[in-house]
Image (cartoon, rainbow, N blue to C red):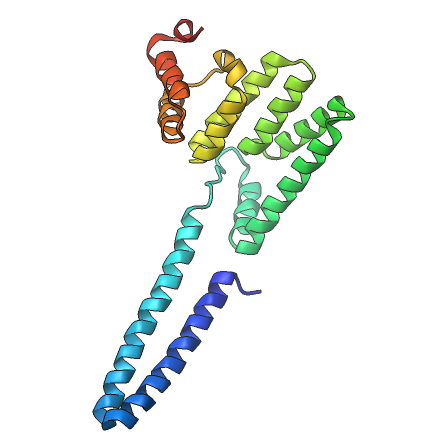
Length: 222
């Protein structure tokens, strides 16, 4: 099955051919062979620019995808993940499966927090480098009163989001953990990165907290 970008490129190429023929015909009627040549040349130039822009936008969307850290995985599993993510359909399937399991956990949580915690542990074990899975485990631990473990996992989720360039997710998770942020454990380079992220996301107080923790240690933020 072709991706949306391939379909758009094919459509753009077809449009170029039609424009080329149409412009040549109009130019020939208006000014003879010279007009046909000029019309075709202008159509070809415009078409090439259009196709190039379509491909550029497709490449940008690919580069905007969150990075997947495959280093902790065994070689065969890493290759399987790469194969899945190699196509737009694979990336969509990968995300949809994860989101479906997150939705299941959140549906179970109100009626059975401990069952939701079991599901969250399983999800986190299957996706140990995914910040969304780790953040959900942090929430479920906190819901059953395991605050220390929750904030340890929450710290890991924040670090994973920052390492993966998922800045909006990192800012949202930090805001979610704001009440417990003094118990977060983040490496200096994560604190520095988080300070810049929060400043960019209009949270100067959070940014100041990170810088105080970075330069003066935990006592400065208590």
